[in-house]
Image (cartoon, rainbow, N blue to C red):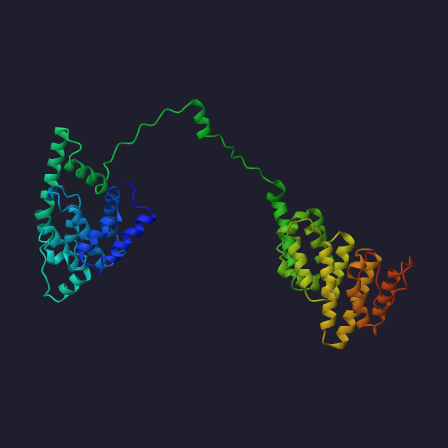
Length: 426
């Protein structure tokens, strides 16, 4: 049987809330006004479910709910009351408050006078609290007095109604409602399994191939040992400079199998250590990572790391070997300029400015960057550090490019910008 919808449930809770401080007789009238005759059975069934969950309703609301259940079956014979077993179960439950059990026993006994009907649930509880402690009869005695006669007479009445064919009689209707609303449905045997069609068997049990495809190059013991050697060399490269022979060994390992770079143990967080200690190894490692999906993480770390000769050497070599993203190159140049401007030590600032100027001249002469994209920023940088000869040389280069000159001015500076394959040096 379907329960109440949201609007009907709201009406039911409004009636229970109203019934806390209102006479029980008024609660019954409010319930009759709130629900149409076709909705009464669903509303009473919902009350039973609410009473089962003891934390939903407070004690005055539970008394009002018990009264409504009793009121619904008051005009029926005791044996035909479909809510009698639920009320008896409440009266026998020792876990419930004694005031609630006493109230239900009072309803079951049929001694509900007009004085009781005029009381509110809260008034009844206050009056009950002022009385001496009441000793209720044991549960077995309550069941023998109320439950057993109800079950026996209800079954007898249902049998007589079915035999006489009086399906529309009040007792038959009440009995049917109690069977569907209050009793669990009878267990029925499972339906027989239908024979499957020939096509269904193949669909239900498809043939799935579980053959594994092995990569022999990765599973061989020789490959595992070579990867272990590369891992050891890189771990050593993260703690100190490698010897030229060791650097050559790393290069040979990566050239033999570029995929080894993914299992060598180098993470983006350790890249700055590798760049500062072994820039040539860092260059070869990044070149193998350039076409992977992880390269953006490594480039992001390279942009944000502290400016140094080795970091610029790595970036310069990368720009000459592969096409780096334009956004990365611009962001790295901006970071270089900001590092020069924020340097506190005068000597270190002058040194960084010379390195950056040589680095920018190398990028411009090799046509790796379009100077127009960073013209204003680089020009302001040159003007700010115009006292340094390399900055003045870079400024003349910018002016030559701006005027459309085909020849570049002579390179200036102690560090000197190398060819396309040579980065800044100090």
